[in-house]
Length: 370
Image (cartoon, rainbow, N blue to C red; front, top):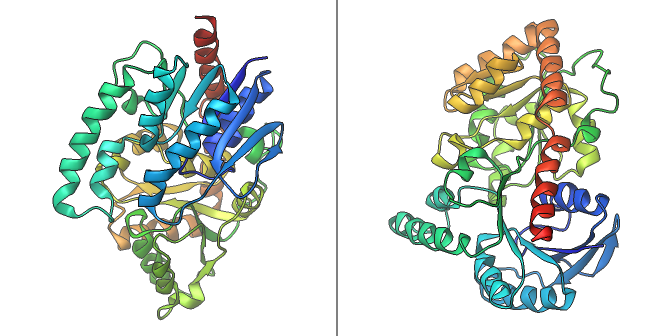
């Protein structure tokens, strides 16, 4: 049995990609899997050994101190492969390589573009910091034994033979209990699940729902965490208070249950560089649950939605167009239901984790045989 150690200093022990997808898939394949993660206590979940490191309150403390904790715990595991998930752990990955370990870097996003949108970095320094990071990331990636990237676009940023494009598609069994099953009907509310922020379309969603006539009995239901928390105050302004419901953070089962009652799922991210070339995980989860989507009109997203006829694309900054799409869904329930079924079918056939996990396991087999 091979010993595998995943490391993160940013994500939680229940992170969907890291724990529920990658770690669980590796454990089921027969590996002995460890996950080093900021949490209160070490434990074993679904056969995966969770190793705790301190959780720091500030970003600066985390960057300065978490790497030392993570490296010490990692060396105690004595794994055959170390697999890290955060760009701030590049130094830890390089130190493991200097000690003769096999290391995989998992690139979840185009961090070079992402850094240009970070509110905690002064605007003047964002491009400079992004350029420096891009140089360091490219150079360091050549030292690692393998790379795992979340989208084909991210893969184009690296020149690496042992690179696996492992896309963040839904786990079929979480949203589709029976592959032949279809929803008898859709719900009446619009749903958004995920991190809630301005750049993810919070204001546009709130304004769009109050633009809909009260004669159409519908609400906007939000589930997730506000970033920053102060944005939560916006849902109580004026008419919004009666048309918006906030459920807080939901676990995987509760998200699936919520989507079973949705009329449509919203994914109206703003057209910033990091989103234009990325796959929105929530869009595929809506599709997996048989829910039609109302999504940002980005070329990549539009190609998926139009090819599978599973939703409507709109300008995410145009509140009137968003409202029109929502009204259309409410007034055409049969066509909306058909779109939802098309989306579910597309996920069952091609956009699912069960297929993506094979690419991850193939990379591990290749590295372990070397």
